[in-house]
Length: 249
Length: 191
Image 1 (cartoon, rainbow over the protein chains, first blue to last red):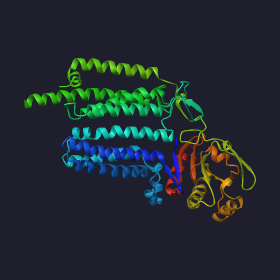
Image 2 (tube, chains in turn brown, yellow):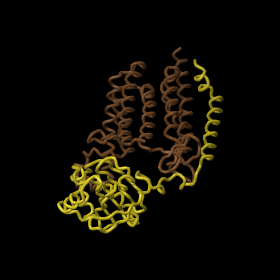
Image 3 (cartoon, chains in turn brown, cyan):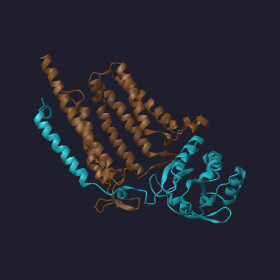
Image 4 (cartoon, rainbow over the protein chains, first blue to last red):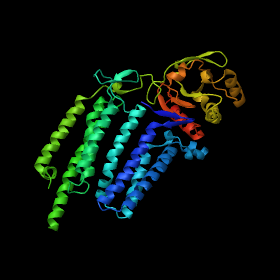
């Protein structure tokens, strides 16, 4: 665990560096995949940039709306570099909406664009795993397995290492499977499905799960629902692609 | 057509595969259920969000000891600082303003001077010059700073009435809006 590295007078937040590397991976991989899928790589890059900027602005505005009286009194706080005053859900919704609106206006096909983003997103998941490893977040349950690590005063499952291993396997599968599925959107749906399955399995080893309905881990329930949607969606996409192929033949 | 595609396209095979996968997932979810208290970090003392703030006892500038756990039931802003640190100097007026505004509603600002890397006389002069009225404790041997894994100055911990850390801000200076919104979140948790 190394949340901060001091370089001279600067305190560098290591998890933030990993997340930046992950965003860089999404952008560079998306450009490469766009060219392979014959999409306009410049438009895809612009879409990501717009999504990122809108996401950051949306995250700050959503946070400020929660404490509106404070920010009306001290509006310069909107410009603060402090990441704790960002609303992650607000930023995610704003960023996705802005990117989707721009992509639609510029005529990007939805499913192929999602396929182009998939290898980068799989790489981003690994960067998130490294960020968790650096910060100590997403920590494991207390355990006496021989490979347990000492964290927060107890021997625990090295859940961040599990997350990295599964992230690596998923990235490998995505790179192997790209171009092999006839349906556009198939690669994206497979990635979502594999990620949901991975979370469903690994959540059992987490020590920070949100518990609902008395004793169930909420992330597992969400993953199960997502998995059901993806399994249905994948079948429908492949059948639809096959039908279109038959119609064209 | 790849074998994978053939499996996905076949409705019967895919339905059976999906049902088995979801059943296995449901079984795993049930097998890995735990009591709510088993996964919370709120009972473990550690200087991070969601954990219990580590306890300590320190002398204040006036010589009176202060024990952190005695502040249970109050919203606490714990600020680790040094008189020579420019961001610490910059954010102190906003901390004092928050204390003046919400001290009556159960807010305590506890400023822990990292005396092991500062001078007691400089800390006292700083407090006087800035007109700080909240408690200022002296970490002479660095034990509290080590307990809070101090890596950068200032470091600020926002702690709810149950003693659980709700937010950690490493570095500074914090804007007035950052301090006031974090305090508002704490005060919402007051009984």
